[in-house]
Image (cartoon, helix red, strand yellow):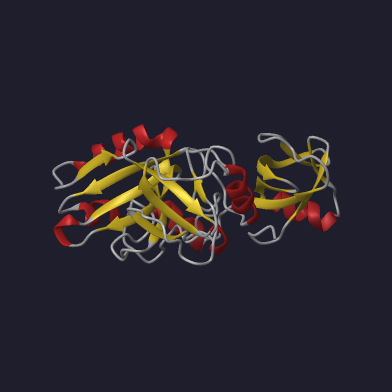
Length: 278
């Protein structure tokens, strides 16, 4: 049986009440109205200018009036998420509550569904190689094997906010949310929707988090990625000989066409065309 990995940097927020579905659906990037028990959706709350304020995995639990949504979010951003959601409540019949004292997020990197007591469990919607994601009571037996999860995440080309892109500064396309099933382009309006839609239909994405391979020691997060004397991006998270970097796509294309060696902190980087660095 694959290990249950504790994700200690994640928090849990509950959204409940008669208006919970419409409330959440009308705020975030993905289609929450179609979310069914046993599934998870990757989504984000954006600023009106279309930049990511916080991203999260959304689960649904219960039916009818007892239906509630659980957001697996970065714990460092949980207070801000609670504040922002509370700001949008107005007169909606909805409650927004932290459940982080009771529940925690876990990952299981396996193909088969793990038989683990959990409040909710679903496949990670961002990549099949990330296995299963679950929210279970704090105290659930788990391993402190975050490095194993990080290696799988980076190999799958899945960015982590705060290291691979900056919250409040990056657009969904830059964080590959459109490639990771994090944006529904057919749903109605939500905060920042016009910018996201325009970026897609006019192909305006200038930067993306892009996988790379490296020989030797990988550059530290924040290291500039250079094509000769030209800065083309900044390195993010890494594991072994793989890493992610937020890259200017036009400059990367020019450098690759010219055969220019790409470096960061003295290391030579080989960028991978496509999302997964396999």
